[in-house]
Length: 230
Image 1: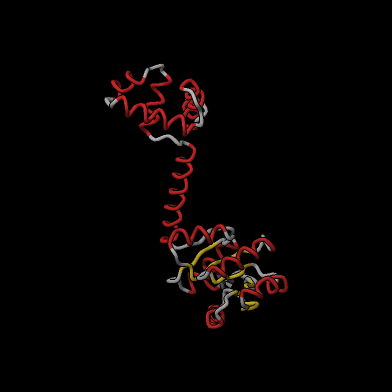
Image 2: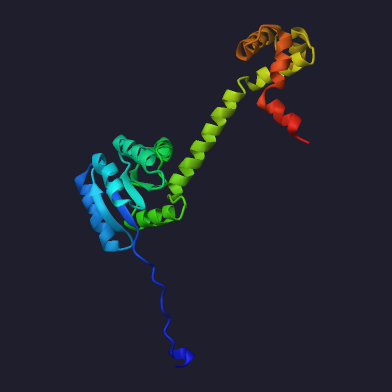
């Protein structure tokens, strides 16, 4: 047989991954099961209510469970599944509620997200990606997650640095040994304003004396970063 006559044999992809569908809405789970059966890339082992999800996961040992995350009850099911079967990938579908909803899904143990506007093809891709250890989500959800994480990081930074920018300015001048009057002149603010700032600084740092402010400033995250910088 010549090279031109050789037939390329496609590798056998193997059996389709097994999944369980968990939704309290019968129409949702039966409709999704029918759609996935028609697609053929996933094998639906069972389509059950949220109350039966744990039993179905124990019985069929699927690679993934598709959880209806359109309601809080779905997230409770996801948390229970994640606790009982940590190796099973959980994929949420029907997600809504903005960034807070997406973060709640991630905290519940979901490995992939498909929002209400998602398609069956997108859901299958999310499942297959999750089984490979990849996070699959729409660009919209990815953007919401990034915004939310940035917001949480900012909140943590504010909690770690309780002083406002102006209070840090005043505290830095206190550390240099300046009096309230000298600080007022340096920052071009009134002495009464400086006094209020000093009072707030003492209160926020939970110290009683000006001298203790210096020690507390040295313990702050920004001061540690400055000392660590070359």
